[in-house]
Amino acid sequence: MGCYIGKFYLKVGTDPAAGRKNILYLALISSSLWIVFLASVNKILPSRPLANATYVVWGLANGSLHYLILALFDSIFPEQFRFIIFAEMISEYRLSTFVLANLLSTIIRKIADVKSQSIIYTMKVVYSYLFLACLPVSFFFYRKHMKELKFVK
Image (cartoon, rainbow, N blue to C red):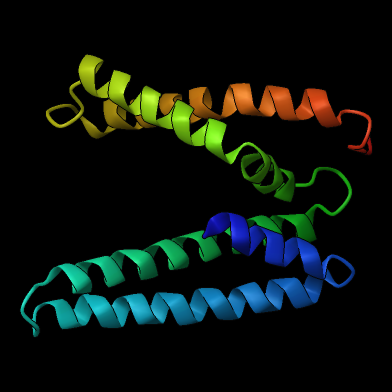
């Protein structure tokens, strides 16, 4: 869902303010809907469709909030660095990112016991995982698009 939200934002392209506004609406609606689903969990008997719907709405809310943050950073730093490039990178290499992230999560589950450790240790593991999952993908993306990307010094 995040890839499609990013493509939607990038299609607006000529008017980034309109893209940010649309993603803001999407984030507000999906987050509100997710809160409604969570509030109804205690009142309705648990079922697989309810759990699946809650997860899908959470995924939409989470993805739209992440893209909203990236879009806001793009509006703050329009020429120095484009944060939305991260979304383009993940979108272009989504299968590679997915496979690498799954392999890394399996390796981490075998090596590190994060359930019984401190929050600091757990955060170190999570950030290391994110770094290792994004490093090869970003390397290949920048290598392929180096001439197209323009960074102002």
